[in-house]
Structure formats: structure tokens, C-alpha cells
Image (cartoon, rainbow, N blue to C red; front, side):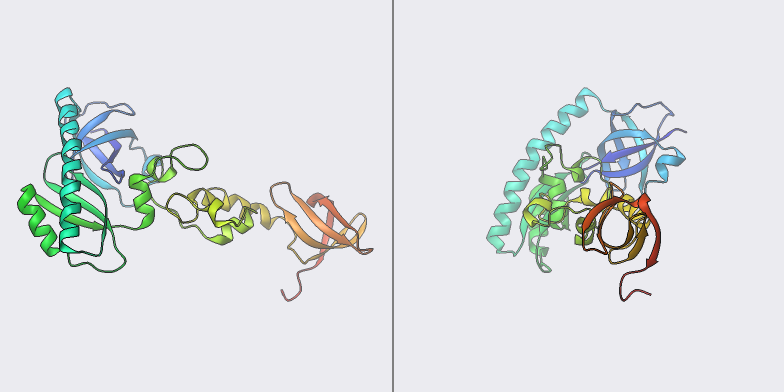
Length: 274
């Protein structure tokens, strides 16, 4: 039975789905699938080959029931309009109950099995009364999901500083850990306003080339090391990792930029390093 990687829901969750009748699906096909949440609209990304599965960690499992029909499209449009009303109702109740939370988004599952409320809050929130009143009003199960600011960007953000759609809402299935160390190694500007994404955290793209920088850096003498070149002894002051070059200070105190290939041997490591 053919299996496919399908993306479902506003959080764009990836899963491995079999087809109900063994039909062949193409990339980009819009489908109705049965997931652990109920019936959901989804998009086929690719066939679930071993190579594709190796990129996923703990994916959902389910079944593609059918390619989306014109009636399904109309139902989706109806649900989108309904979601806007549900959002307004939820916001009204939050304010009425004085709950310390910020509503981010409302998702109505295609099959009507549940409505998912996404919200931000600094601390735990007692939303039992909210759920009770929403369930009575909407006549379906209400699920509350507290998210972080990076998830908020995934739900609401559109374009990044690069001019392209934000990564978290396109190809990223998981948020990669990003640290200031990565920005420093790549000699990115440390201005927070320029290396922060729409979520206010460090940009995910700082993670993309970090491993390559680390590998290239290993081939270069460390900053502070004493090296022997064809022009004499020198001390490494800085590394130009991508260019494979070193800024060194010669014995006569001249500072020159040399190719790493000009280093004949490393005489000693940085001070304090064994």
C-alpha cells in the first residue's frame, strides 16, 4: 500500500499516511486524511521513502481517505469563516472572565471533532470555565494549547527580512535550537534587531550553515596559536573561515592576511590551552 508524507493543520504537522484504496498521489495534492485528531485537510509533500522517513522524528500516522473535492473546498471556506466568529467569541469570553492569556489563533478541525485554541500565557491559566462555556456554545470538544512565541510566528507570520515566506511556516517541521554562539562564529552582526526573526528570537537560518562553519574551522589554526609560515613565525589573530584565511601578526608586528595553506606547521596552541 503506497504511503506518503502529508502536512496537516495550522501547525503544519507532518505525518506518514497510507491511501485507502492504494491510489497514487502527486506532490501538492490536497487531500482529506484521518489523523489522531479526526478528519483533517492536508497537503501531500512526497512519497514516504526510507530517505524521507529518516528526516522525520516520531511522525503522525493515519490514512488518506480521498483527494479533496469541490464540496470539501466549500466546506473549508465555510470553516474559515466560522473560525473567525469562533475567534471573536473566544476573545470576548477571555476578556469577560479576566483570564491572563493572549489568544493567538483558533483552529476548527475539518471533521468537526474539535476546536483547538492556541494561546500565549506567562504562567498556568485556569481555563476550565472558558472551556465549559465554549463547548456549550460551539457544541464540540474544545482543546486548549499553550504555545511559545516561536509557535506564534509559525501561525501568524508571513515574510521574513529576506523577503521570502518565514521558514517556520514553510519548510521547517521542527524549530532548531539557535544560540548567539552560532551568530558569532559566522561573524553575523550582533545587533538583536537584525538577527532576530518575527518571533523576536534568534533567526532559525543562523542554524543552517553552522555545522559547515564548525567543520571548516577545525582545519584552521586556532586564534592565539603560534604558527610557522614561509615568511617566518606569526601569531593568529583572527580566522576568515569561509575564505580559508588567517589574520596573523608577524614577528616584526606587521599584520597580514594569509591563506591557511601558507601555514607550514603549528608551533604552539593558544595560551592556556593544553
